[in-house]
Structures are given as structure tokens and as C-alpha cells.
Amino acid sequence: MKTIATLIFVLFIGVTALARTAEETVKLDAIEITVTVKTYSDEVSLKPTTEVARLYKRINTKVKKELTFTTNANRAKTA
Image (cartoon, rainbow, N blue to C red; front, top):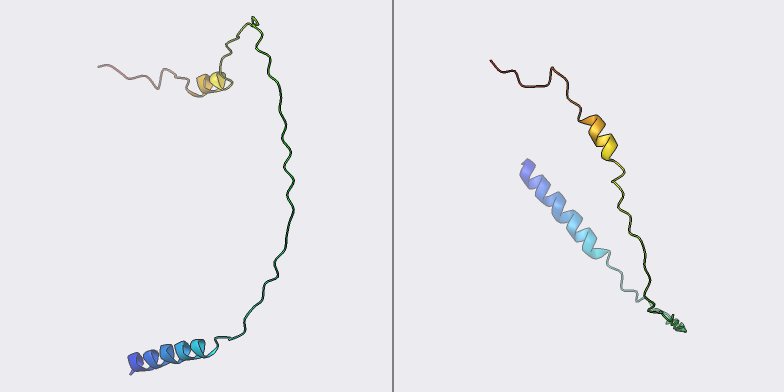
């Protein structure tokens, strides 16, 4: 009985959903937009320059080193 009532309820909801389909058509107005394209050209000079490259340590290396500290209690005990 409960199954039949549920089936009828679902069919009723489906029929009412189909009955509510609107037949109105929506007209869309086209909007024209003008686009201007600007091009920029930068000249690159290829002069041979001598620069010094510096190699820096990573920022978090000290933090990682401090977080991975070991104490005597952490070491493996040998028998």
C-alpha cells in the first residue's frame, strides 16, 4: 500500500511538472560592441652584459633544520 501511494505521488509530481512548461518565447536583443586593438612593440637590445649570478639558500632551510632536531631519546638503542 505504501509503495502504491509513493508511486502515485511521484507520478502526480511528474505530471504537474510537465503541465507547467511555459510556451513563451524570450526575445534577445543583440548588442554590438566595438573592439579596438592596440599593438605595442618593445625593442629589445642584445648587448652583451656581464652579470654576477648569486645563489641563495632557500628561505625555509633553517626552519626545516630546527623542526627536524634529534635528541638522545630519539636515537635508536642498540642492545
